[in-house]
Length: 183
Ligand code: FNR
Image (cartoon, rainbow, N blue to C red; front, side):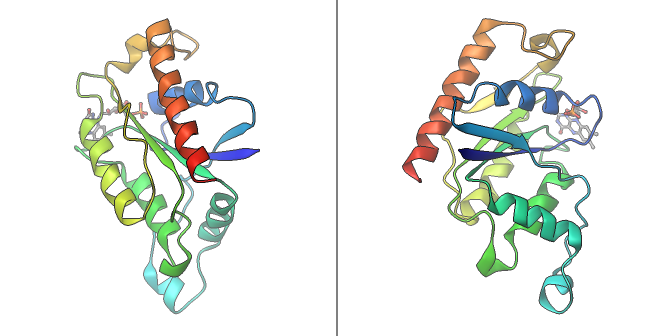
């Protein structure tokens, strides 16, 4: 079974981003097990705890969970033209101790969304930058920017049209192809 960690960049109860993530999780083929790994309770990263003291327990739990995953799907909204702090904190926590980064070599894919026209473009591209440094191969095409997200979801939070589902299926297929290259 190939395990996919799904990291959601919003903690909001009614988050559109989480709804999008849950829809995309359904599109993985048999043999793939996507799971949302919580990042909201992670202590803020403090290098002293890794270098001179005891790492926070929340970091250790997160790092252990992530180590068991073969690939990472990031689904994020945009905050102030970048990624939300909660997601950046998770990336920083996972990146240390440097020699033991949980990210290195793990295939990744990015989805951004927004309730209005922008589609999270800024967040999507800011997220690509640390993933380069962290040595993660990332799905390049198709890029996924979902604008006006509420119009794509029905009252149960499911995608309401075939076009969106088909497009995201091609994205998941590209992600699966990338994962296979690294297995
Ligand atoms: C936002 N929002 C936002 N939207 C956007 O398209 N570009 C942006 O730069 C920002 N900046 C921003 C900053 C902060 C602090 C908040 C709280 C919100 C609006 C954002 O897209 C909206 O709240 C989404 O609904 C957030 O995603 P979830 O929580 O629905 O997943």
